[in-house]
Length: 326
Image (cartoon, rainbow, N blue to C red; front, top):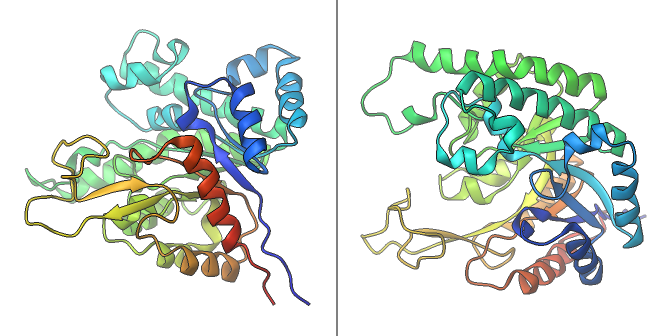
């Protein structure tokens, strides 16, 4: 008898930061999504959720009104701040005032850690088993390799990460919620081997896993399908975002040359699902093979495509990959 690989397909609300939750919920339902991956930075206020007894009831009622579920919430800015040792205007623009405070680094890190603990508690109240996000890094500035950095500096960076994140993960595990870290440039885990080292730094504790987003692996030369199979027991969430790798013209570099997203001079650009070079069929076959049953979330970041068109088009492509398995 055939068994469907009908994992729920959700839309990440982060790229709709300028749209009220009511509006994006209505649109997502009309496009045919099963639910939303809700961005805590814009569409779910975890501080208010703990202080206002009726807030989560209203939140649930809104999603129920449109027949939408929620299987993951995301907190990228606060998560990044937990593991970041220094801050500037970019972080101030992303973090809410109650985390930014007076702008001192250790104060921000401490308040961000409390915000992430709060996010785990709110997730549990919502019946959500995973929080997607970044984790920050004190050693990312050394990634390029010049001036040279002694091994003990890198090791101290992983120890710093573990020291700040272990108390947060204590709360996640107490609440029965997983943190799904997204390997991404700028984070403690940004490719295959740094993902391995990150797990080692945490002594492979169960509350920490990965959000699989192939777009950030492809331009670095990491095989996203190998990542799925090798980290099968750590895949907590899936974000589908595609990337188009431009043919080499001898001018474009992989680090982007400070060119804006969508600039045709770049060596790569994010595109909507199915319009780039991610081997989607191989990836979904791997997801079936490892037994992943969680949500499949569409993350739209295509500077050359209208986001409403992209959201509907991506959903159809994802649906076509969710065939029954024997």
